[in-house]
Length: 321
Image (tube, rainbow, N blue to C red; front, side, top):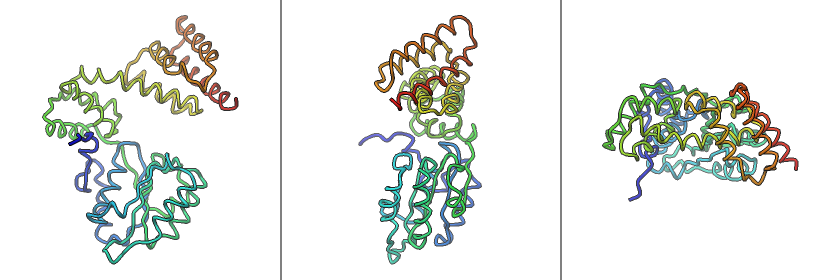
């Protein structure tokens, strides 16, 4: 039997199993008493705080054992265009067999804040037309990216970042179940790395446990992989023009991971070298300039931020070419 990833193995199945979102759980339990009165829902808040998990818990408890047959999950960041809304979603919401005791179908739209404006406008119309047959659970990290006409048609639930105590308690529970030794200081380090994101925390836990036990040394060992992933995300954000996101990742690498600025520069150059969508001669010249500045004693944080800004210009130039 294939071993499940811990993040899926220990995902709550019912609302009562969800921790650290007590107010939201209590409000949602009210809908379970009379499901037909449940409105469309909008879940907003940071990643890894239980938004998608709670959406599936609701689907299970409202639709029963055959909930999968009447639930459609879409990641809107992957299928974000108007065609998906007009075909997949519209077809799914056309009919529901209420004689089977199913009050409506449920559509879970994850990362809906990545949908285009046109797709959201089309979605609003379908929400209106299919209210007798379907309920939408719209999930977003940033609710302000959801158009107002959709927000006004939903009951909005704002998720808070999980507390250190709640995350550590869950990690200790998993370690006990998996018979893995864990140290509290290592779990605290995992919490700081995950920044309150339960999904990340559990993934880090499993990676550390794979090295034997969850201690500070093994958590530090997995940080190298994490940093490489963050470097790639930072470069992609910078090249796409999202300077704010790139700068946030840079800050995390310096402050949370304690990575030296010279190492960040080297890892960035290694990650970006060989990309066919960029002029590698310009890339080499750019990094050489900033390497020289760091050697000369220029403020490293400011210089790396300026490098990210220049990567944004480089990315725009490559798109026009």
